[in-house]
Image 1: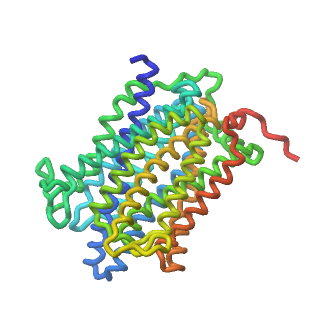
Image 2 (image 1 turned 30 degrees about the horizontal axis):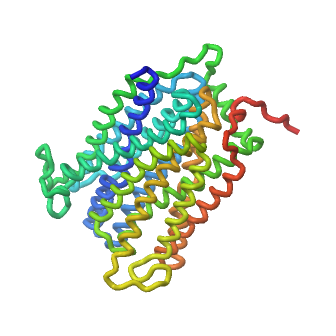
Image 3 (image 1 turned 60 degrees about the vertical axis):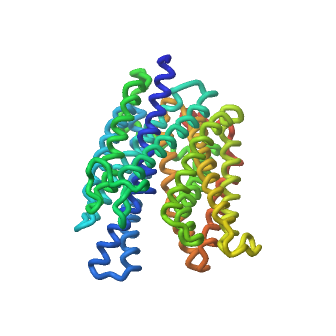
Length: 464
């Protein structure tokens, strides 16, 4: 393997190593476990069931919101400082330590006398570490290969990451995460390593497991990835870098393609995250699915995401990232329309037989499409951001990209909640996501397919 291929494969391993934080901790294992433990704690304190669930959700939501604000505010600043110093790898090391400490500490959330606030703080430390490490790792993408190959590399990285998240999820479900009622794993075994199911040690092990997974699989990254050396004349002090960042932000008013792309990605990524978060709620509330069925739904989405990201990367290389993004958004709008028009009783007003399996089949199909289009959308979005920056300013650019992704992260959940409450209908509640996807699609009209690298070098128009 050549040095260039080793460097690319090392970069892939970041996605493989870091994806389990989203898959295992945020979505499928720790998040639900936290809700279960927190609800039981508040019930024991005398709260009514509804109030206990709401309080558990509120505590989790406050933590995620605080993490989101920290990421949104600090990503561009730290990115600019890293660009100025030319030392992004140092920041990846630092935030990797935060990832491991935060994830490993989740072991301490025991079902008896749980330290809920501590668990939320630890989760957020790891989550912020993961997001910041991702920002600086993305910033290395422009220097990995020729511009024509960046789309394929980005897609393959996402595909590899989804496979890593899927592999980690399967290991946890088969050998560690126990049922709260039976004390057995998905295949009927007690938790491995002698972990005590009564103390939920199998499920709690997800934190140390994710930390260990990351530490082991980041070894190829740190061994094979080297940051290009910055000529001494291009190294800037922190104050100068922050001044350059402010100049770049002001310059968005005069750089239509970059501004339109950041706005577009803000809306469609917010809609995508809302769709991810809504899927399980819809499946349980509208279709009456069990947790096992939701788990299969998640696995299906991860598999299709991995496959589609690989093929999407090739399409990106052939046609460019913007057409791939447009097709992905159209597919996701179609999924939203199916969800709005489907329940157990009817499909777009056409009555269904009482025992019809059509809703289940269609929703599994939707899960596959969400995984495929969502994964491809994220991979192509990363490529299009590369086309709007230069290797020297990439960390700052991806900091702004992270800011645009977090600035309205509250919008999709808030709109879904408001419309659901106003209509009393879970299906209708998803319609705001269609509007957000359409806004993102419209703004892409002003995004140049070849990007706008002058945004990081051209002087601003003189003030009047």
